[in-house]
Amino acid sequence: MAKHAKSLLSRWSSRVFLVEVDEKPLYFRLQERHGGERAPRVFGRLREADRCYSVLVCSGDRIKGAKFYPELRNKLARDLPPGCDLTTMGSFLPRVRDSFIRGYFLKSSVEYSPHIERLLRDLGRREPLLVCSYTAADGGGQLWTQRLWSPSQDETPSDYFVVSSDEPECHPSALSMINNDVFHSFEEARDVFRKCGGIIPEAASVLEMLPGSLEVCQKPKFPVIVIEGLDATGKTTLTESLRDSLGATLLRSPPECLSPWRALFDQEPPLIRRAFYALGNYITAQQIAQEGMKTPVIVDRFWHSTAAYAIATATSGPVSSLPQGGSEVYGWPSDLLQPSLVLLLTLDAEERKRRLKDRGLEKTDEEQQLDRNQLFRLRVEEAYRRISGPPCVTVDASPSADKVLQETLLLIRSNCHL
Ligand SMILES: Nc1ncnc2c1ncn2[C@@H]1O[C@H](COP(=O)(O)OP(=O)(O)OP(=O)(O)O)[C@@H](O)[C@H]1O
Ligand SMILES: Nc1ccn([C@@H]2O[C@H](COP(=O)(O)O)[C@@H](O)[C@H]2O)c(=O)n1
Image (cartoon, rainbow, N blue to C red; front, side):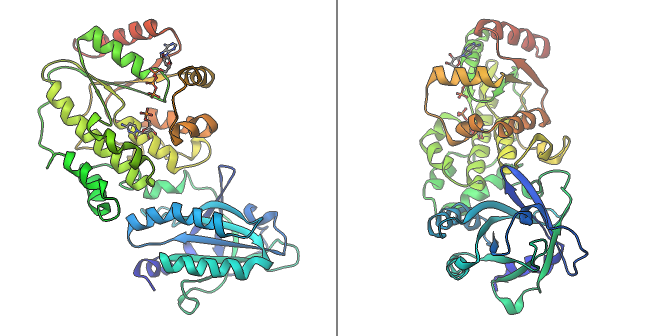
């Protein structure tokens, strides 16, 4: 059995599981003896003739695991029998860092079990998987048991009853966010790119753009102002006006030099995609350090965008599922240049949609998700506000472009020495 899978099994009965139903995580845990509790919500509406499976990716190589996770979904969606329900799930050890693993939860009629189990066994030969089946243990569908049948039954724990578990304080993906979704150092992000060179040849081109090491640069002489906000809140319009009004240099993150590879890395799983944007911030930081010796610098998106989108994507459900304010995940990377001021443009959802429609440009998957998914948008906005480090001031972006510019100039003059 793979070493990583074995270590996951060592504390199997302490694990908590969550199944995402309509963007809401439902939690259950394992118990040796049943104390008469009702079935956890995710099993509550099932019939005795239903069979469920959890399929958790437990690759010891996190690049391979990250690549395999979306691939697994595609394969399952393609090869599962008709009527089989597929949703995302995860498992974790409460309060244990890096214990969160991801997978899928399948619901099907028992008649399809042989087909499904054959399919899961085949998939498990490609990459290590932990597969459990869930069966009704009574006539009324109130009692369900979990059997861990793969990778190998003779080495796995016995059957357990499943019972509801309390919701943790925040989404458990927070346990594994640092340096998987939110990179807190240049070296950690670069390491991901070094390791994925074998599967993504373009990673080498990105590595060539990076500084060899992070030289300790002097603090820029002039103010550095970052403009943040969701798409279509007016960042491009405002940053260009600020450049002209202040005689500033305008920079962007990701920087121009990474443009040829952005679309490619946008298609990669979060581990690689987030490392790409994290590295982009370090390249932009070098440009800021240089230009900031000559003129004020305006930056269109920087670290806040990288971290806030990453945190919001790794979680699900309402804002309360985000890691709590003050959590280390919101911390500013100690090796990344801090701007003098961050201005966060906010706009109500309807006006933002109207501007998006008027602009009519093609949208990225994440932008489309912002449109469709109100909870995701709220999580991104709240994560923006919780990020610590440089002072961050919210600006109402709904007045005319000129009014927003005047308001912003006032804020810059009162917060920075200009
Ligand atoms: N204050 C404003 N009032 C009305 N319309 C505006 C205002 N600011 C920008 N717009 C318009 O809204 C649209 C989006 O603006 P802009 O491209 O500047 O946003 P953005 O935040 O840079 O978007 P993205 O992040 O997607 O690049 C554009 O068509 C722009 O002309
Ligand atoms: N510093 C950054 C900048 C952007 N992102 C990601 O890109 C998407 C938004 O960029 P637009 O150019 O479309 O405005 C968004 O999905 C962010 O995830 C980033 O991570 N870091």
